[in-house]
Image 1 (cartoon, helix red, strand yellow):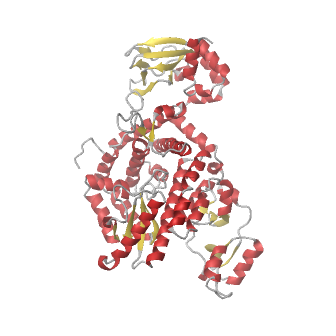
Image 2 (cartoon, helix red, strand yellow; image 1 turned 120 degrees about the vertical axis):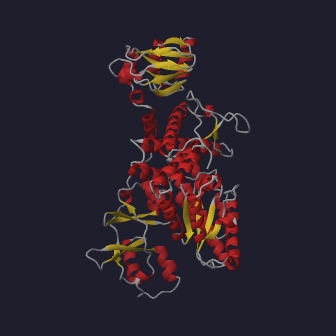
Image 3 (cartoon, rainbow, N blue to C red; image 1 turned 90 degrees about the vertical axis):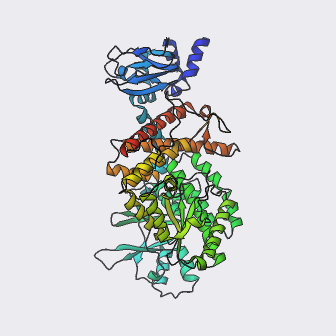
Length: 624
């Protein structure tokens, strides 16, 4: 092949959809190409003229317009245009104008038609728009992972074994032994039909019965676990895994309406979940001191890399990593209480930010706080809670969770307060917002009670839900604040890079990607009264209210997933290569596939921010 043609071929194979074409088709394309140069300002194709070519941009950028004259899109190097006219009646549907000097490869209509007929991936690519391509890229990854597509009922291999709540201890143990099960469902049979009331496990028998030498005739209802965590039979295996991680349970009853279909055990999940995050959580709870926890923490990054390499999605990875971080905090709180004695008044330890949203990765610091019961007397009780907070914070630092540079930790007395004070905080932040309280809202409005009297945290969630949705001024200012971080996409759909400093020639996938998304999703969630914390779950709640038009919630979900997974892969690669992971990415380190779809995802974020500004009347003024 001539050097000129080889250069054309090498350039095109860097970009979708040409990067996946077989050699025979690539050679056919290259042999047919006509190379044309257009100066900036030149009309390349006119509305209604005969569609004869597929255009590939070697260099430069163009604007594509709708029939009405409205700007439709801007595309640049490695991207195509003209496919819709070729697919629809051979007429140009979208006129195109050069906005930079452009070198264009023109592929004849008959070659385009041949490619469309011969290659399914090429046909899929040209038939769908940018956002649909983004959705296709996301769904293809999900479909390749059995955890994402298999229902939890696949793990049920037998009928549930149950007994009435009136059964005695020895009889319950006999039923479990004869049936070879590690958990027994306990049913309330006083109504018209049996109703699931509780569960007893092998571990419960050891720790609650044998250890305390309970009599064999003790009613099982005295030691059973009530208030069960269950999962729907319609749920997927990955949802069962995340539920176990989040709640630290090893047995999960599967419910279909009022019927109990069976019980999924930790061992059942492990057969599918080879990344070992559940094993790691179990190992955390077995440790006796901070030294042991520090040793276990060395496995966290390995678990993260395994999940990435087995194509877990970002929701799974973020939830698993948050579950691991939550488990370290919970175990440290248990160890702290053993060391300091029982707390003088009830309290709740809260996780904030990414851990509360189940979106934590390996590059993370501590964000936590304490809610104390209103019987708290500082002079009598605060020495205990300060010591406990310091024990936990220092322990987390030992385990790789660095101290928060903004001092958003329970060691700060401002974030270690009675419930009434916390209610006052949130009321003031919503009713009288200012620059500082809006920054606080971005952290504290993502909260999760992870230890102690967690109902205290639920009371704060209720307060936030009720007040925020009814405060238009607060939502306007919060929306304006959410517009401060924009995606790194320039006018010509090029990446906007850091110009100086240690991260020059890079863009930050957290600060310029996932953070703007979580910020704008939070605003919509607060506006519609959603109680969810996770961004994906919030999008589900938002979609139900019709606050977002058409399929915008789905577009945001796909954008969040794709940006997150590129960020996750970037961190995993750094770990595998022995480097410290971070969030700063150089465009040349991304594959053409990632670069192309990141541009699509960033465009979704940019459009969503425009809607946010319109929906909440969030102008450009910074006067709050």
